[in-house]
Length: 334
Image (cartoon, rainbow, N blue to C red):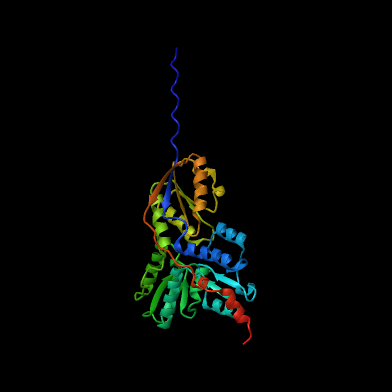
């Protein structure tokens, strides 16, 4: 009589390496809370110029609460409240709002405001400012508008050959805060080769959250065959994280807004999945991806922590005033 064959051992669960830090940064948290607070204090509608942050889920959630997103200030009815997004705006936008007697709430990320102040200072000292960033991005438009006669956009190292300045002894570089650190420094290197006297800003313009999330995703890429980044297609920092993962050696990396966008074929032959999220993506979306992965055999979740984030930002000062009273006063004839 043949012995009963031993049952095959159950396959080991797939592993998920969960990046920390990930998801919302202090600037995004502040901007979203600013919209929610304005809605609570004044009721809907609250107008928001451009997406408050580049995340589909966040924008839809705020729309459901009564926020109205517009592209241009002239779309906002006179006498209304308008909130400027975390990416910042040019001074001309503030002027447009004043002309339309709008009450404004400025939710520009303080780290972007820092770059704005640097641009104004160097322009006052008559420097040519080389702004490293991506053409058309809201943050780049807002920063360029601080000193348009002094700022030249440099969209990557391949753009350096086209850059011309008035005086090579008075040139400084600044950058969009959400770029890849490696990409930015490659562009800086090319600029320094062309302009040896190029001045650097007093501190790195790439925001702490962008840097921290890129360091974390590099760590994931060491062991994961697949890296999933939760974030929207128009989120610069989320797109950069996918690129950083691939550059760091991950065989595959994909950007998804929701768990439903994950293709099961991505998991073929994959034992370890790295999971993170861009600075504009809420952690609830990461939780949904974790649930999806667990349902597909990836239930062993291990945290990969590279640093601790403790930075917080206060709400915009305008939310500590009575904006409706200000609007009424502006409407009253002198």
